[in-house]
Length: 346
Image (cartoon, rainbow, N blue to C red; front, side, top):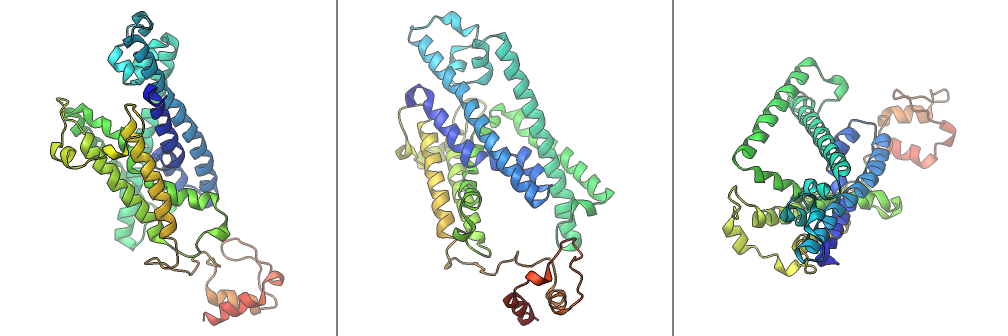
């Protein structure tokens, strides 16, 4: 039941399938370093497996809640906890729940948590280095981000300095309040706006998707859901003494009408359901032709060759069928109307 902890499983299913896999640096950073087709395959496969792992990981909390309630109600013996704290088990703490399952499972969960932390740090540092070096510094130098192949030793050093800086700055808040780590639990809620645009482009046929560019179809759902997620975080954040950190926000922002079921995560679940719906609706609304900043010109149509080169190739009897990018073009199969469109562009 939802009261028994299934609300956490439902929450994991929503975040795990709709948004969470597409913002994790382990997936996104590796994808964006690859070719487009490789990136698409990696997103699809990685997103699928990540979704299942997130949902299965949510079962740890469900099991802990059910086991804790069983002990708390006197139905199960306290010895079944194997020395773990009843409060921690009921709250779904992975280490406490794993302890109730025996030494073997506890060791496996510990290894999983360690390797997860290492991989996340690795990808986070890689992303920061690429952002500070080739991307930002390259943009300052040339007006656009540099390709990794064009990066120099200077960009490498800038990336290293950025990694050291983010390691120090990111650790300082934890020294004052270890509870700041709780912000990671709401991360999937803040990025839930990714669900609409990514899944729309991944699932729907090309004939159903807009042609050209629709920047607001991505920006609006992402910003809208991020705003809701940040407001939710402000109502739940606690200081090092366990008190609400932003008491005024907690009083003035009311999400109680979004509660789903009687479980502990009822409000968390309701907010994520709302965000998933808003993300999909906003994506469709701002993908229509009336949308501001819409551009119906397809930026990917024949972009490999300049128009002049295309016309020369179309009109020449002995034109080379291989362009400078290594792509072969069969001049026999070129349609007459495409040639006319290219000429009209001169």
